[in-house]
Amino acid sequence: DTEVTQTPKHLVMGMTNKKSLKCEQHMGHRAMYWYKQKAKKPPELMFVYSYEKLSINESVPSRFSPECPNSSLLNLHLHALQPEDSALYLCASSLAGSYEQYFGPGTRLTVT
Amino acid sequence: AQTVTQSQPEMSVQEAETVTLSCTYDTSESDYYLFWYKQPPSRQMILVIRQEAYKQQNATENRFSVNFQKAAKSFSLKISDSQLGDAAMYFCAYRKNYGGATNKLIFGTGTLLAVQP
Image (cartoon, rainbow over all chains, first blue to last red):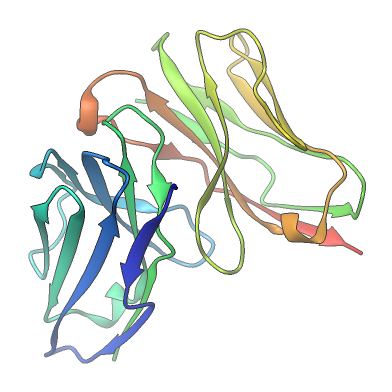
């Protein structure tokens, strides 16, 4: 089973709201990723967690705050977002850092 | 720095025909992986095929096969007997085979494939 789940599927939030995106995998993968994707563009890496430790932060604004509570779960906390943050947010996981990544279905975020 | 180039922004193929999507990459590394990912309109990115650079044999997955030319740094995807469900954005991607989780997946810009009935 190569399944990564993400909730919610869709999220609409105002610029003053606080919300969270959730990602879960039960494949025993120890690396998890957050990507941002604009329409018809490739995904852009935001964060990487390896063995529950943040190993890459691609200079993402502090209004995005990742959290990895355990090896199966990855959260992305959102606060004071801007309309330009509207995008598809993809989570991915891999067995270890150098193996192929498996993606979740994404959360479509709209900031109003 | 490594780069991945997909020179065909859009392509079209008739159902049941064969189509080839192009990908070139630039790297000074010798040990790496190459991938093709498919992203249908439903959005989920699906791994189609993987190629290890040290393997000379081209990878094959059912109707999907690659032509890996390491010296030319070329990695094309051939889809045989195209089906309507193959319509999607296809991304070529590269990753070094060391460095653990700091090892980023580098994507090309994508090729949007349409399948005509």
